[in-house]
Length: 238
Image (cartoon, rainbow, N blue to C red; front, top):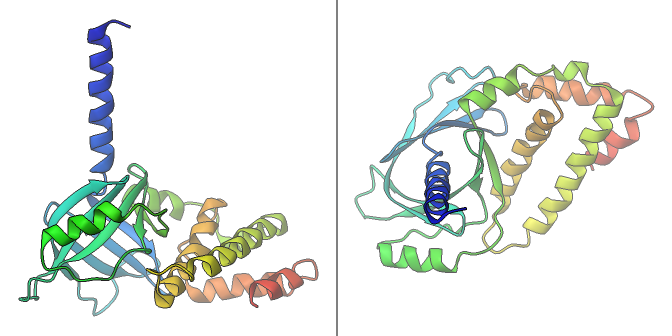
């Protein structure tokens, strides 16, 4: 390859990486306990909304808006400097994102500091030391969540698929035990992480994860009432 070709390839690679890093802009959704949380990222704002499982806006929902006061790319992560528009004390929190699949999935990191900073110097010092492996909530793009919504209903799940589902969920439960020992992870975050992951796994296995809690309970009861899978469900619920 000639020098111009090498330079062109390098330029294209750098351009691709910049685009991939910026792919958090737009609307994304995350599964929570009994609702869907929508995140809308723009150049200077983060707006969060609460949605129902059919992706409609929840009644009496009041969107929460935070100002994005700055952005830093480091360690393969995206650090957003967030300020409440109502806060007059100049406190800045740091949210950490990680692009997993551009235009499809990003990670909202949970093993992060909950410190409120007052200057960018201390934020940069924190980021410089923040090289740990990241875990967190999966956020899906609008296009990806609509694709997942078109997948099979969980009422159609086969026994074999349920066994695969149960195995993945129990593996995740072991991961939760390990995460609980990390210094920057809180039990409340892990609880909601668990709620989110049981639906993420449904999507990974080809089923629609946008199911109500009642539908999910019925789904689990169906397999608990089967002799072949009762002991597996009982183990999952321990």
